[in-house]
Amino acid sequence: MGKGLRIAECVKFEIHDLLFVICYLLFPVMDYVSLGNTGLKVSRLCLGCMSYGTSKWRDWVLDEENAFPFFKQAADSGINFFDTADMYSDGASEEVTGRALKKLGLRREETVIATKVYNPMGNTPNERGTSKKHVRHAIDASLRRLGVDYVDLYQIHRYDNTTPIEETLEALTEVVNQGKALYIGASSMYAWEFARFLCAAEAHGYARFVTMQNHYNLVYREEEREMIPLCREEGIGIIPWSPLARGFLAGNRNTQEKGETTRAKSDSFAHRLYYQDSDFAIVDRVTAFAKKRGISNAQIALAWMLHKPGITAPIIGATKTHHLDDAIKALQVRGSVESCELRVAGCELRVSHSEIRIPHFTIIPVPAL
Image 1 (tube, rainbow, N blue to C red):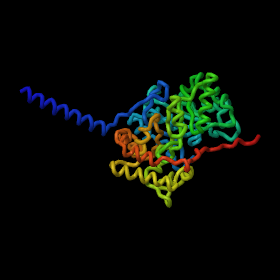
Image 2: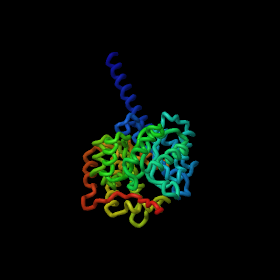
Image 3: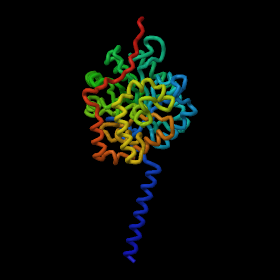
């Protein structure tokens, strides 16, 4: 009787384990981590909202009705982190984002909302950049469009070299002190520029950047030389944009055809960033590895990034249901990418010193007065 009971208990235990695995695969559990050195907890994936707003801005942007399902899919998957910017769809992205989160019935305590400032929001000289004047007006306008009284993360979209670093930090510190943002962050710039911001904040007691939203993926890895080591040393959360190289890593493009979707065909920015012979060589390696594992290129590319030390949450763009599906599934592939095989492949894919690419920036000239 005792032996039979033990066998029954073992069988029961094995069935329980099997059911747990099945449930995990069908309904994956989102991971949450601290945003840099802060106490704020964010999902390992962030939904990028540049694709939501109005097609009047870019022909590949989804309007509010077509965008809402992606907010719901993200929320249902456990994503609590949403990133937008004032310049996306000339402000409409913030409006769509704010209304979607409210329509979903998400409490403000549940969501982490990030937006950005820097790009022109008008035709006059002071409606751009990161001066005290523009930051003061920009944060209020963003909060109004989002329909909230604060954002969790307020980021400078680029480094404004026409404004002293101290002035930018003072302006952002005032935003934090006024309760309009909990934390501040930065986006693409040179590592030495970012280091100057960190030093100035420490020297003058200004609010400190807690995140870096940089350009980083399997095709573009220059950030591994300086920016990522700097961020890891300083406890800065890394939330890369374009983790799939604007869809290039999906493996459905070639030198003759830029892609099948409207965005792939018309995204001139992506055409400047990628499409070199060496880029296609990387995609071929990813494709071969994905086929061997029986999963998509996107899952491999995202799993590779999620495994990299210091990465907090890659920012995922989604205009098709499988985009978010692949991103969620990538969370489960992490055990596979730790294999020696992919680590060796990753080393071979590193950009050589003779192929260093200078980061791409959008330079916005200030009109002469």
